[in-house]
Length: 241
Image (cartoon, rainbow, N blue to C red; front, side, top):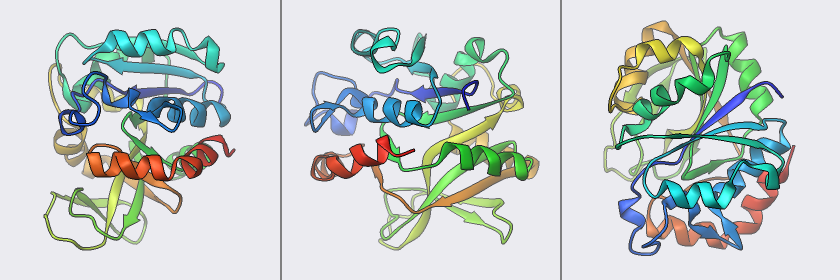
């Protein structure tokens, strides 16, 4: 695990959260007494992932000032600052300079937290010879999310767009392991992992490992409030090994 790098996607505009966090990038929104993004950094570090690449964009300076080189949190942080919004896939492609020697690497959304065992996810990834492995979570109301359909062998067979119907579903939790060759399938410029890259890779082999732990996405004011309410649970989950 010590040689695995993690790319944290922290460059989004966070427009839906602007009403409650007007002057900071979404991953720096305070949850409890610390920036939300610090929970992700601590979670990775506690599981032995200490080499991080933060893919920044909107208000990048604030993130760099907050975390610096990572020494204060016992990690090494490099920054891949996108010159203009590149979307989730474009940001990963833009960060490939920092992934030269990585056979596999972790990718995480910077505005959601999923309690996950990274070692288990990486072992699952190798066992299935997957090109992408994703953490998925069953939620009681999946209308805000796109849902994921699996076959009996945990292979992803389809992605369904947000249906706007309040029903349970299996959702993409924003935590992935990528094989290096994924970078070859992403064009230069703006593109989306969810809409462009993953559907294109289904035939190559995208697999999903269902998780049971705490999951939250702070993309809306309502969920940001909920994150405050469950801060102790989030903090404990980040520190579990």
